[in-house]
Image 1 (cartoon, rainbow, N blue to C red):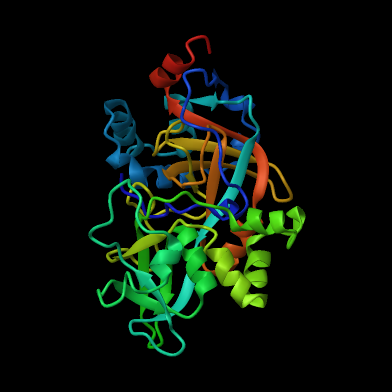
Image 2 (image 1 turned 45 degrees about the vertical axis):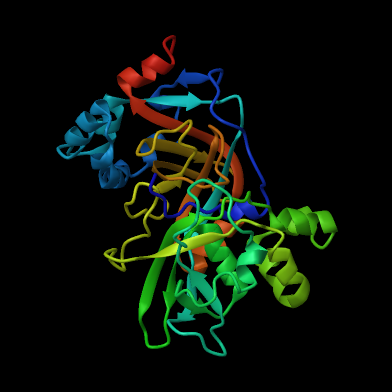
Length: 345
C-alpha cells in the first residue's frame, strides 16, 4: 500500500492505541440523509471535486461506475443522495476526531553548524514489515554515517520528530528552494506516546498536554528532552516527492494530493479508502462536513476514529494540534454495498 501521510496524528502524542482489527460483530446501520446533522448546509460540490481526485484509482467495479457518473454530475448533492446511502459503522462508540497537517521546516542540502539533524531516506536493507534498529540506535550516527542517505539537514530536532509523526512535510532551503518529503518507510517498532510519558512523570497535567506544550518542555529541558524523544523507538524514513505542484496538498495514502478540511484519514479496516465520510465533530468549533477518506495513520484505529487534514504550515499545525473532539462519522457507501452490510437497514 502506498503511504505518504502515514505517521501518527498529533493526537498520537497522547493517544497510544485504539481498537484492534475489524470484527465481524461491528454494527452497521443505514441512516437517511435527513438524519445527518447539517447535511443540507454543506458545499457538496466541493466534496464532489475532492471525491473525483481519487475515485479513478478505485478498482471495485461498483466504485468505478460511480466515479464515471461523478464526472458527469452537474451538482454534488443529488449525486451523493441518489447513488449512496449513509452507513453508521460501529455507532455504539463515540467518534474521536483529531487533526494533522503538513509541517514546514528550515533546512539545507548540506550540513552546517546550524543544520545538524539529518532527514534520512529509506535504507535499502530495511525489512518490509519487520523490525530494524531503534530510534536511539539510528540517531547515534554510526549506523547511518557515510552512506549518503541524507535528503537534507534541518536545524531543530523537535521539529524533525514532529515531521516523522506527520509523515510528510516541506523543507525550506536558505536560497529559497523548497523540497517536499513524504513517507518512505519505518523501522517497525511500535509508537510510544511522549505526551503520555510526560503525564506519567508528572511533568505535564493531562489537560496541559498538547503539541505546543510538549515542544516547549523539550526545548526548556534539552538533555531530558532528547531522552524523551527516544522514549519513542519508532523511526520514520522519507523520500523526496517531486511532481506535486506547490499549491497542492501532500500525497496521502492513495498517492494523490490531500485537501484541507475535505480529506480525512481513517482506518481502512472499517472505512474504504476513497469513500465519502460525513463528519459531525462536536467541541468548541463544530464541523458538519462531507469529507473523503483519502489517508491513513498509525494512530487511526477503529470504525469511529478519524484524523482531519488542516493544511500546510504553522497555522494549520496549531489548529490540528488543538483538535481532540468527540462526535460521529458516517460513511457513504454505494447502495448495494450499504444494504449488503446492513440488510435490515
